[in-house]
Length: 273
Image 1 (cartoon, helix red, strand yellow):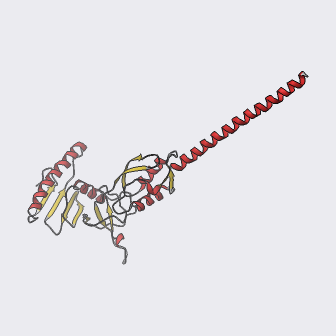
Image 2 (tube, helix red, strand yellow):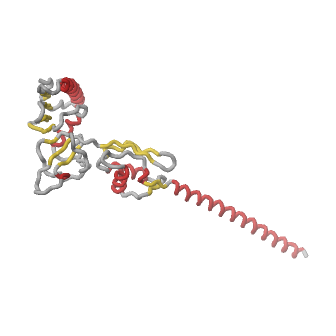
Image 3 (cartoon, helix red, strand yellow):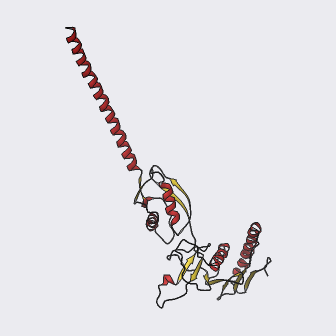
């Protein structure tokens, strides 16, 4: 009799334990399913269409065109997961690869699933005419534009109103976004960077001759002779500031005279003649 009772109690205990185990298993599955669904929803919400990134664009490109080119250069998908490990670094690198981008300042998160990219773009500084080797040549292949560091800009860069290098050069071997490996291009574009605050006369020419950079116009009596700077970096910056001050003052006075008189500013020595 006792054996029968113990057997019955054992059976009941097994049933109860089984129900409890099943309950815990069902509870665990429901929690796991909830967590998995939450993860899926979270990942879905973290997807960002690359075309929706909050970014400025160069003046010659629409935002859509610019972001498509950036995405292509960075080999990125149309939708990026902003929670993916290393994705911000890849996006940073993709923007920095674009030839119009001088500097990626930073990438900021905007809310849970958007990004804001802060950029500095290259500014056209000089037109470089190309040696014509073909009888028929596209307009875009007659000139190339560089920025103040002599970096080659894309062929869609605006050319109107920019100073022109006086001597045509062979077509550059490097692509857009790379500095033109030519001393005259680098030196002249750098000087134009110093003169960026001055609205130079239209159709200005620029060239390097005997260690001097000449900026002049053949239509109005205007000429700047830019000589070498001090080898001391600190003194060189001071000399640049002094020259810019002199230029602004003299150029402003010349404009007020309706450019009737000749303006020649000679920095071939420290004190302009």
